[in-house]
Length: 168
Image (cartoon, rainbow, N blue to C red):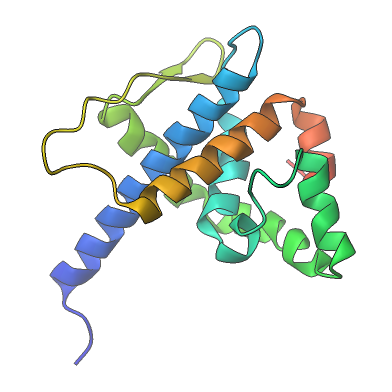
């Protein structure tokens, strides 16, 4: 017998919460890297979400690379450009999941969406209660999201799209 309906719902909910955590960390990384403290437009989260959700794409997000340009060039250098080119379809397929992740982060009080500017602003996370600290694997995912946010903060949307070979 396959997994129960409740089991599927729990996995889906957990994935949404993890996605919310990642988009929040992405937003924090973006804002911390900007000298003006500006926030990212919501559209950037629809590019970042699929990168962070894909083991193949997120593996190369680390502090050893200096920039988004270096990240993208890494796929070309390793003759894995097809992985980077898959991002366009991943963005399209993951639109609902990314929107749910943003919604979860807003509901949890981690993000605020400014309807006027279309930007997502991070809020401080509530203090962890005893016994509720993040696991190491989750912290690593958050660190990757912050790094990606910092890389995105250095560029405008057309430049990000060009480096990542996506059409918005």
